[in-house]
Length: 181
Image (tube, rainbow, N blue to C red; front, side, top):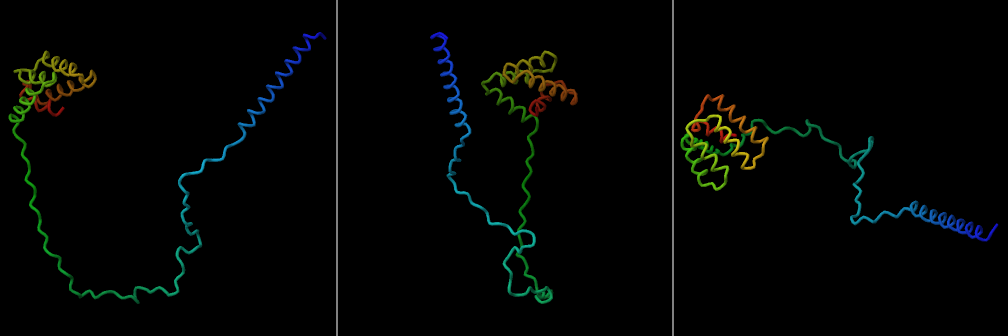
């Protein structure tokens, strides 16, 4: 063999030896487990509960008495009368304001509102009749107020259904429907 071949063979054997030693070192580190970290809180073991056949309490030295031995109180003893309790008056029921008053308040609040939804609804509620253009404007108002497409469609469909059920076409009678939706 030539000198070059011997040097190459020695280098290959040295690399194999280094790889083998490195693999053994890494493998032994993975197998070694670290002890679990000490817990900061002490573990408290609950007292053992009695098992089947064991007594739950310490035994008593005295015998237990029966009902006959204890005796019952006399049934003829006068019972203490409870003091009379005043019954509070029932609360007064609140009567809702008529629809006209609520609509006026709604319009007043919408007029004070500075957002596009309030102004748009005020304009729509002030109209004389609900036609297809009005419904599209309600939809546009909700969309520009960033309510979203799906919620807008759902709201408009529910409002249309309520208007059909009530059989009304004027905004004055539809305003309570809008408030409920």
